[in-house]
Image (cartoon, rainbow, N blue to C red; front, top):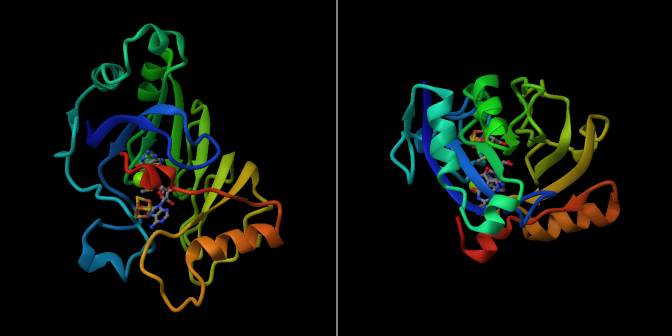
Length: 216
Ligand SMILES: C[S@@+](CC[C@H](N)C(=O)[O-])C[C@H]1O[C@@H](n2cnc3c(N)ncnc32)[C@H](O)[C@@H]1O
Ligand SMILES: Nc1nc2[nH]cc(C(=O)O)c2c(=O)[nH]1
Ligand code: SF4
Ligand SMILES: [Mg+2]
């Protein structure tokens, strides 16, 4: 059974593929936070900007079979001529998608011509069938998924040094400014991230453009 918080059609707002139209499938639940505010401060991930509890969001629900969920997601892709000609794209996120994403679901999407991307915290192994792997490390949680396409580090995180990640096997290293209340920093987080990129040019700055655009 797959538990889906919400699913929607939007632009990928983040990372190397920002701007690309995509279906987002947000799985319920995470292994690094319960999703309850009273647990946030004592959880391995304290920075989350997302509600991933329950199945009550837009186009959310529970799906028993990969084929049923794949058909549900396919129905969100535009059926204009351009939509059919374009390579459809699905981003599995959450919550932590690798608690639920399995090979039958990946292959059901690929059978429907989708390219399959995942946004993961890196603490669980990613099936090799996934076409685009984005790992976003959290605090000192151990990184199990040590290769992929983009490593997208939220910056700053207390005690986390970006230099500790550049030996991992990724094509793109992206710093994404922390969206949240300033915590004892003299500069804002975007300025801090951009300063880090200028001083360490292996890193590129990635903004959460969907928040700037006020879209999902
Ligand atoms: C909500 S997470 C879900 C996927 C997965 N659990 C993960 O953490 O990568 C989706 C993306 O949003 C990023 N993110 C979450 N909270 C954020 C925040 N406060 N500021 C900036 N990025 C954030 C995560 O790092 C991740 O890249
Ligand atoms: N537009 C848009 N792009 C995104 N990229 C990653 C997201 C996520 O929550 O995983 C996200 C999201 O929630 N919305
Ligand atoms: S690991 Fe991802 S989904 Fe889980 S709490 Fe952190 S940012 Fe949110
Ligand atoms: Mg998001």
